[in-house]
Length: 590
Ligand code: F6R
Picture (cartoon, rainbow, N blue to C red):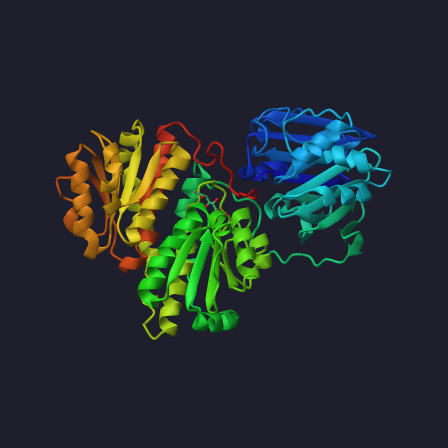
């Protein structure tokens, strides 16, 4: 959440900052701003809305600057709450949340200092001024020592026109060296094509970038850092002829699955991890949002194939439920970005309590990988659409591979054969799923929608519902089919759309009972099924027929039409599916 950029070098800073901010816009897009330092003066432009609002307004000269694209935490999206925040000689951009800012702000106000915004971040500029005695790095050191919470900071000081300062605690921050100068950004793609060396700051580290040098500090001492080895993540991809990243990324589901299937037994890099798998007696999965739904799908697969108990907990709750870790506990933290603050905190807690932690992530150099014992990389390729699509299918491919491996090590067969068929099947589903457009048009005016399924289908129901609500803004719920009659059935009236997912043959009749209950109350049913005998039933208004696959793996296919349904419903309601309101791709605040 929030993207920050910085530049110091030979070239005009403004276009470089603007380009970096556009590449980071998936992190937040309610307001944006840039500060450029030129001839001892700060030129600051801030705008409500998207980064493009800054175009044409920026100071053309000046070769050192900082920029920010915001996802509001403290204070409404507005020009005055947009970053950079300036006080005295300092300009600051911040990503994160300062938990003690009320006390710090009060302290500054007691000194008679006036605040111009409602943000926590402005406090940093005030503290920097307070601690400044001619040495900006030392002021930053003293300021960060006072901060509680999370921050990635980029700072300019008018007395130091040849320096850009950085600090990091629990929010990602990268520094880079290129031909044209030195750079900083929240994420690697903002720097792609510009830098030949990239460094990731760790928690508690500061950096000073000058026109010629890049120095890192920890606890007041200069330290050496090794550059990142970034092979996998290039520049931000183009939309490739699609109107939206989300639709383009759905088109990549087949390759995301194929690239993320892992044969743990035969790959040498998993030798140590395999030993852990053999000793694992209990698994806890922690994750948020879509990644949490991957965890639920994995629970069904691991428990049914390997008979190892699995608990799945939303990461923000795991931290406060006093988790019990016994010998033989493997904690799997699932996160596309590897930067989700709640998931990182849950993984950290699990580690402190003695668990072995494996990260399942799409970003191998992320903060989550730094603290995990093992990294299981999904290879979905960069995902730009804020709503997760192909990364979900990739997580399932990897977690199902894990389930198969756990089963194999317990002498229960592996089902790898069934997994290898899935990429090709997913391509078939994708072309069929376009047929959902009509149903999407039909529900675009509805008041709410419901998704139901039993067993593994329940996981697809949860994900289908999340997708729909986050990009179409249509209130929606995913329910275990059998639970509907315990309350939610009261909300079904004539025309209420209900999506039933039906791929588990042993449970099909039971789910159809729930469908009949919905139909009897006037509900309009879309059936997503791999069981053709149910598509003609009178209760079914429309259906999508999926190819058969190993039933416990079916969410990896059944979710595809649901992603498509969300996409077309969002379009029908006039929304931008790539940038849903109030959301951001990488949730780096708790
Ligand atoms: C929904 C979505 C979010 C993320 C969640 C976790 O489409 O994208 O629910 O799944 O914010 O993000 P990661 O996987 O990066 O930890």
